[in-house]
Length: 182
Image (cartoon, rainbow, N blue to C red):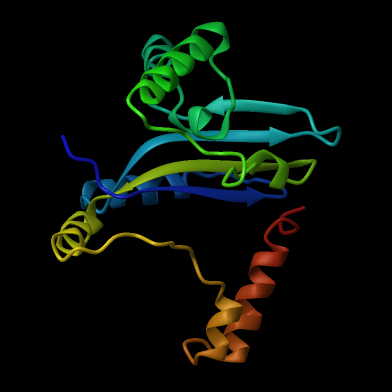
């Protein structure tokens, strides 16, 4: 089975108040065949920088251990104990034997270092089903992905896609999200 473009999204939460809204929206996107969640983790970093990781899935614990954490493999986080590390090492060795490498040190992204102490993050590995026909058309035309990224709403003001007022309001909402409901 061909897999569509895959993206790792890291969402930070100063004081999480999960009410099922995020999962419901991801399920809606899955139902419409827009995206598929390949893997997801919740990471809690205490004020001392110690991590607690929860694998978010509808898989049983045995299935999750068997499949391993795709996000954990991408970012170098062994969350499934010795079995998970062994499974990840086997996959990495197999990829290396085929001439495929994971991240090199220059391209490495230390997601967990970016997470502030005393906060949480949701790490979601998404497959973008909607983008498969576009990707395939680009490849047939001889094209390839050079880079990608989300553009900040504040940067959209400069090109006229947001007004300064809209950007300030959105920025204020983003900055106060962790302090509401205290």
